[in-house]
Length: 349
Image 1 (spheres, rainbow, N blue to C red):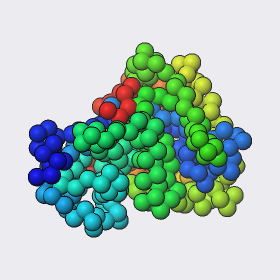
Image 2: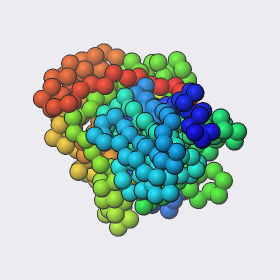
Image 3: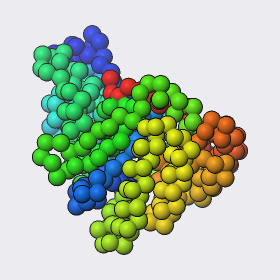
């Protein structure tokens, strides 16, 4: 067996990373943020204890096998012919970057497949961390968090053909609750990261969050392309600029633990989103968001919406009132459910 196979037979390698919920998503895409750096394009994301793991195991020399929970069949290819355009193409690209072979990659996620919680980005961060750990075991150096984020973003952006954001990978790498200012025009610092809450604040926020899966899977690339086209044409740009103002205020409200103010700002963002991104709402998510707003909470879809998940924020008593209401509504959709999670203070590990 090769050195890699020997090492993995002795002890498999594993890494994991958290998924996220977000506000202001899409402003982390260069097509939006780069021309408007003067207004400080921003997103806020909250890492969740729904983690995705990537583990490496020994396999046939010269071959790479990749499989994932939620996908019916794994894929196996020789290292010199690994495809980057299959369901596991992004993961093959990561393995190719490191040059390893004779291994099996197993992806397992605690969040539903295609649930708009940043699943593919979380998985690639976890896989790169696992491959970095394997690099250390064969005598090379491992990657820093910033290097993992850089590689994960550029691999996903390149393999997807561009127009990929970076906030999902950023949440997976760093965990916690952060506000991000996107500065792609900078040659050295493509973002500024501001931590909004420490451990105690994260615990307080967890008690005021409700996250649910709508039962309908989504594909973000199709929706994002439409949003970018509408922004570039100027059709929806005023609305996007308003969203950015709201999300900047939302981050400050979270930082000072003004939960009612934060909920109000989510409602304001959703009011604009209903106008500029109506395709992000399904019948189910529209009803759930309206139910949250009637209880005095704020709620919005995650990622690009069009199915997937959504989340609500409000004072403890309001979230407590909302939970059984959502449970009743979600019972009508197959696979839909409240997701048992809280804020994850740790990033990739």
